[in-house]
Length: 269
Image (tube, rainbow, N blue to C red; front, side, top):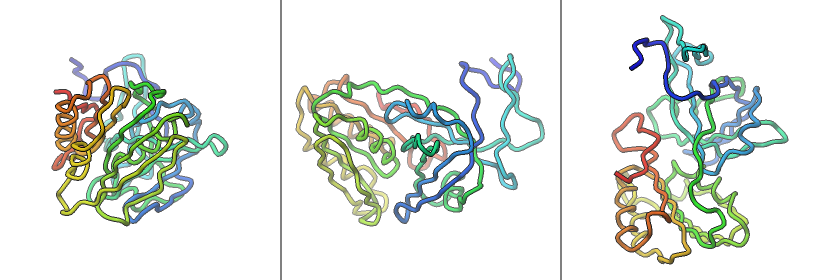
């Protein structure tokens, strides 16, 4: 147990980098793309599809997040200064020519990341840690069934970018309504279905109905990411219908009523 409250334990990771907003694009009324630069982000060029990053957001009154000092004993946080809020995101894309990283934020009202993204402008500063995560499935699989809600759009996009032209992919996306729809592209043979929530709190209902009808074959790989309880319901349905656990990747990206859901929720509990 680490008794020093200013010291971070755990395995060694590269220290987070402070980066600067270079461009902000409003993709939909509720989806914002923030393009970040001002640092060497080339490590993101080889990030695995659906990988994750840690976003460190400045505390109220700060122009940039206060970051720890890395020492041989661990990370040391300065005393008497508010620490940054930290959230987990999937980077959408790295632009090698510009040296920038695109991170997409869903605007869902209250919350440090949503509120920051809603007012983000060029010159604003945050910090990034990562990338982390490895992609466990075989990208050469011939068929894919992919499902997620708005929070999963960056990960879905990165997965579709990685699929070869020889693959086919059936993608199901749940969103609040037509205004949330965005183009999805891939070299793979792509079919996309959008599911609009009939009620504001009907999270996962459309995706679960699609999972009940999904064709089950041994050559198909399944990838699902959405609200944690909905993900578990979809996971149970797919397993009960005969999908092998080794062919199924599930992620609970958020949980209704939780402010900061753990980023390693695979639904296999």
